Image (cartoon, rainbow, N blue to C red; front, side, top):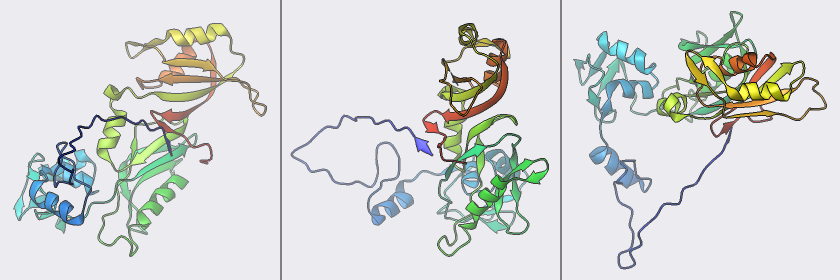
Length: 298
């Protein structure tokens, strides 16, 4: 996954009289990346407890909402007592947490991030499945009621957590960031990082999403102006950030239009193309924010 990175120059105050030394805590509240002893001190003395539902979701038990349902149903115990409040503050290293009689591991799975090149006709099912043959929790993608190759790819991700190199680490629960409709191809992100997914998918982030629309027939300047003027979608007038007619490719006879939007409303690009009087042949997403679809990703 190609990621466009931006750097910020932080203003630091220099003190020549007193040398800087690594401390056990930081003003931002994040864990210090120093010695093992410093990290242990931070985890035992400084780290703040988190909400029970968030801890369960981070451990790969289920989604945040499903974890709240498990808590409400009385299937979660904390230090031997049934807990029915998802807002209860717990520390996974200090507290003994059980879900359906199984103890929650004190080791959390690492944060994983994947870019998938979704083909046409593939629909992601937003629930978690358990493979009967391997016992791996993985999010499945189905295509005409059959498991797609992406299901097997995600299953292989879970396999690496069954070998001896990752003892005691729970298997990751992967889910998609945002969505693509069944006829749209291109970039879709998978992760087990809920905070990362929330930042990218929330409308307030206003992340740019770039699409390549292949058109049936000719494209003229009036069509591009009509797309740039926007259209009404769900009662809101949506205007794209950028519209451009791409150069003709030697191996492709149909014209292509690059459209960049940030609102991400349902079928926004399709409605813009339709409102301009054009017939859409295919639609592909190639970028979400700074994450671009690798050109060599099949």
